[in-house]
Structures are given as C-alpha cells and as structure tokens.
Image 1 (cartoon, rainbow, N blue to C red):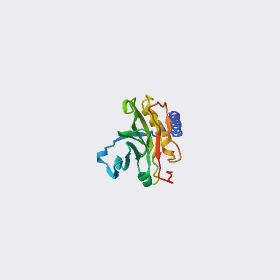
Image 2 (image 1 turned 90 degrees about the vertical axis):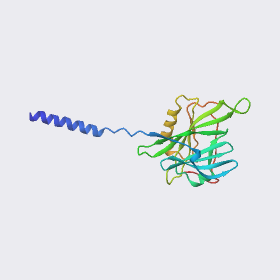
Image 3 (image 1 turned 120 degrees about the vertical axis):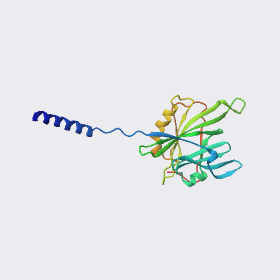
Image 4 (image 1 turned 45 degrees about the horizontal axis):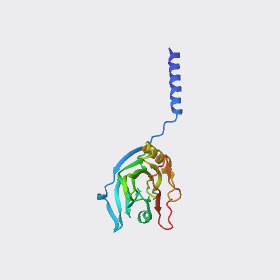
Length: 211
C-alpha cells in the first residue's frame, strides 16, 4: 500500500516538473476599435487649404489628423510635437481615411500599432476619380508611446488585391511595428500590389528624424 502511494507521489512529481519545464505560450496580441469623428476633434490649426486636428483615439492615446490639398495624414499616439506641427505622410493621389481605426494591443493592453483603411481617389478615364478607379490600402502605422514620439507608416497592404488583407495587416503590425525606426526605415508593401495602390508620399520637418 505504501509502495503504491509512493509511486503515485513520484508520478505526480514527474508530471508537475514536466509542466513547469514546458514553456507557456506567449499571450497573443489583440485588437480593439475606435471611431474617428472629425466633427468632435480639437482644431490645432486651420487655413484655406486644410486643417490640423487632435482627435480622440484609444484611451489616452490621441489621433492627430491633417488635411491639405485634398490629401490626409494621420499620426497615432504621443507623437513628437515637431512631427505633429510639420510632418505629413500620405499618398500621391487625393485621398481620405475611413472612420474606423483598428488598434493592435500587446499582452499588457498597450497599443503599439494602428491599422487604418485609406481610399485613394485615382483619376478615372475622364480624369476624375470613380468607384472603379479608387484604390483601398490598409496602412499599418506605429503608435507613438510616451517618451519616444515615433509615429509613422510601417507597412502597406492593398486591400483590393489581397483577399486576406486584414490578416496580412495584423501580421505586419505585430512583427514590424514595435521595432520600426520611423524616419530611417521605409514602409514596405505586404502581399500583392495592384495598379490602384498608389505611391506613398511624406514630408518630415526639416532636419528632423523620428527615432
């Protein structure tokens, strides 16, 4: 009887030690969503060509929105003030962003990337944009955290050319955004790129590099 009990204790001990030796799976990143309501944003600057706004984002992480010459630019999180004032990252054709923003969160609930759909109003046959000529791109951006100020495009996914565009964007966000060097690395196209996915354009403040 005592021998059986001893064997059970030994087997249980081996099982516990095996469980402790097995690495636990890492907590997966998660997504949450917010709406971009431009009518409820704070106006930072405005002129005849456009405006610069500070909008509500995820919790304490704001969204900085700009529009100029019918093109838009968006930075997420605690972006550096010089970047907010003088930075602009967009696309060559006239464009607009969707009202829904997807935030990628790490295991602690901190946002490190944002995924935002852009509509690129490429000219149609008569020179004016049409539904058929308009492209859609999922832009993966780095979310600036307190103290670093780094906010920029990280990756681009043609939402019309890739049926799994959302999954590709999330994978790119998880793998690239946390360590992406804004101002030093170029955002890359992920997956297939069709002829409606126009080139990115950008302008950083003179002499400024986001690290």
